[in-house]
Length: 329
Image 1 (cartoon, rainbow, N blue to C red):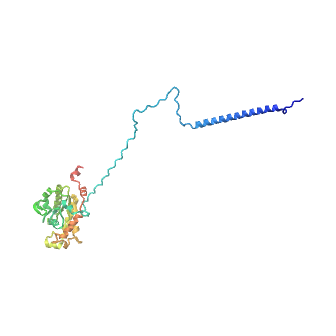
Image 2 (image 1 turned 60 degrees about the horizontal axis):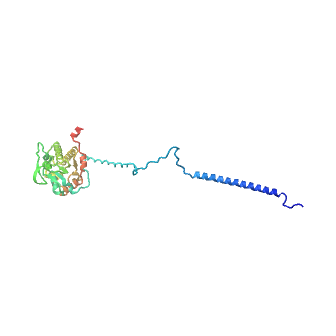
Image 3 (image 1 turned 120 degrees about the vertical axis):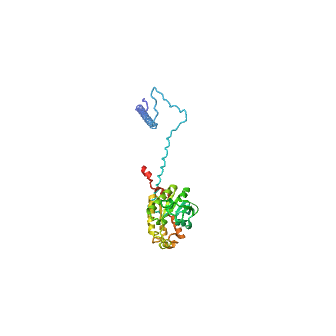
């Protein structure tokens, strides 16, 4: 009797299926191994890229690292020495301009009345009229009727003459008064009485010597020589008909005075310009006798002096060099 069983060829089919499954498992294992290997390589590369750029290298074999010794005291921080500031340059002082003694005193802002408190005026009766009628206060006056420049220093024809201080009291020589007190300004006016002396050279020489004598006694003073004021001819002729008393001689003496100022380094004050009229003479209303002035004209004189002063520094800067200094250079 024939045995029944499975389909013919079944044993061979099962064997083949087992072989196929085995091969699939091998392939899957190989694939998994590749995946693991690739992942490991990627992780290593990532680790290397994230490592610090600078690593401390190990000391060579056979050596040991030596640490620097610790500081035994406080740490001193050295700083650069401060740079001293540049010194401020000292400004160069502006030189004082020298006064030009060939020119008369310029017009200036009017000074106060007390500006004349350290001044002395030396002259004849015209100057004494300034003391009496102009309103000036505080100044000293060595002025007297008919006083001449020759009476101040004397010469072989004229002796020195004593005068009172401010018109009263004891009399002394002008230079003796100047020995006893220091002034900041000295004003001179002489010439009307000298017109009759008849010697231009003697007049110039006496004025120059007077400047020298005053400067020796008053070294800090500014010396002013005031111009002669012209006459009013008609009244002057009635007062004194002498031929020498005329305005031509006045003009010539003013020229001599300007030369003394230029040579000696003293200030010429053109008082005449304030007291004459358009014709260049003393107007009738400004004089009592053709020679002396009315009160209002003395006030004009004083007002002119207040607006024609010279700075003492400019005065000093313009002084001529002494002959002894020139010889030593």
